[in-house]
Amino acid sequence: MADGATMTAVLDHGEVTLVDHMAGDHKVYGAARVSTGKRPEDSAKGEVPDRKLIEYLMANGHGCFDSETDVLTDRGWRAWPDVDGTERFATLSAGNCIEYQRALRVIRYQYSGPMIRVSGMSIDMFVTPNHKVFVSRRRRDPHDVFTLAPATDLQDASHRFRMGGGSWSGLEVSPDRARLLGLFIGDGSGRGTPEFHLRKQRTISALYRWSAGAGFAVHALADDTYSLIADPEFRSWTRACYADKEKIVPQFALAWGATALAALVEGLVEADGHIAVRGKVTVSTTSRFVADQLQEIALKLDGAATVRDHPFSPEDTARYGSKPRLRVTL
Image (cartoon, rainbow, N blue to C red; front, side, top):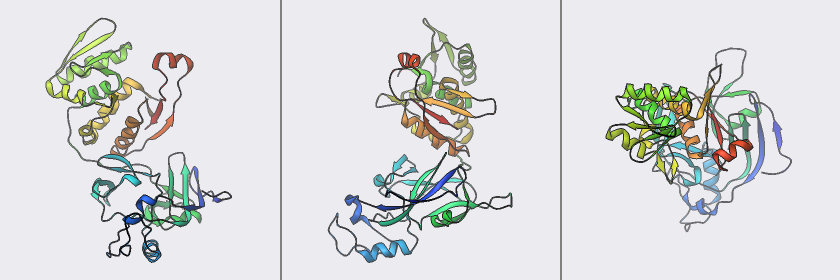
């Protein structure tokens, strides 16, 4: 990003910046592919595609993100340099449905020139000027009409970005089983019989209530520990909540339907979250992976989520350790 960038404040609660940018990732230059079949002229792997190819890409609507942008796929969030075209991308259909689709092509090329930076409370995007963005131009008409427009339009007038997700269909499971899994991700332990170390009476009551709804029994042990007598399937679910010694939302749960996902979030909130008087939901976690997964879940609940640093107070550090903590707001 060059110094002295021109800035125009045209985004609701944010700003749009035109900056100079020079790509420098030599590992991806030789991978340019376009729908016409045009390719770099017999260039060796790793060399820069010819200038005419780059001009063709820019002139025909192949706008791009920068290398630090993440994209949601059926394998979770991936950085653009890690995309190889074999994954499926989360898309929004004309009928407002979230669907996973294959990309028609993967395009990587060196680019030198202006780029558009969009930043605000809930968005941070860095794109080439011709990149299409899904926005609604602010008008007196109260009904927002969202359409695809080139990023350069953002410099001329104030626009709204659609931040929420869409309708999502998936496998529905017992809401109480989903709530228990969310509670386990937040407060559970063990790779055999699930256990919970609980002190809040509200959370203990929720454990008993949801366990009864799922057909499970709860045994109270010493030291505020509660053992869940669950079936083999649920025990396999809790074992899937670990990856590299950290808690995660199992991949199969991310494919659940909206009702089950909402129930899972309810369990997580009971363990590590808070619901404000006006309904704003926040969840605290030390796992960046879980924070990213909660953003995915929020989209599938036709909403959105933001992630912010949530430092511990000095007394909390002694209790929770020194790992950075994040606050996810849905």
